[in-house]
Image (cartoon, helix red, strand yellow):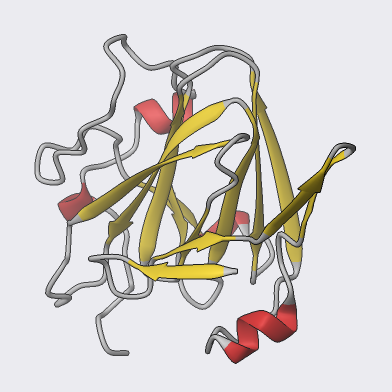
Length: 186
């Protein structure tokens, strides 16, 4: 397993070791012991799996407020996505900054997104499946979002069509107007 730090503190790129032969391949997508050895003491409690049929489907930017905030370990198991993490921790030196990474069924990369970050992705192909682990159960009362095209964040989404959005995501507020109880260093 290869772990790469990014320009956003706590956001990590995870590349599982893959072993293959003439039959195919095998990899561990998560191993608690290896994560602990790497200083990542997480207890995942829920696995989520989404399917998007159409290229250009955008989901996000989502997060849950504390005390039900979630760390996510995201991977794409069919097709390709551009996955995004946005730092929403008030007083953070990278507040409002974002990181984007292409996750595909072929590259098998994963993105670890800690609490205090909003998360979203856009599908780059048809028939996309995304799977992710979270360390806190879904709590609808804490579910929040930020509009995908907030001009203060300026995410460079790599697609030239209008995204397909849920009604909830169309109505999400700007970062500066969003309900947000994350503070850097707390």
